[in-house]
Image (tube, one colour):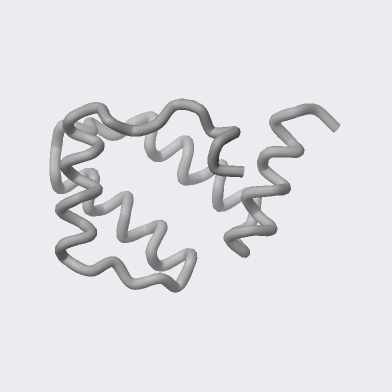
Length: 80
């Protein structure tokens, strides 16, 4: 099993989201213009539905700000 598969397994087990759904989200994200608030909201809402977690409006605004200001952490190992 390679590093990518291990990462997907770990994310899937922690989030209870299937690997195929995670890959589908990743593919969807690659086609989105993340400077567009509607695209970000749509993506966050998809994640919210898959994880059964509600995103409050203030959380959504914070997520939008982080993404649009390119403040997303790039070291995924810190989250695992």
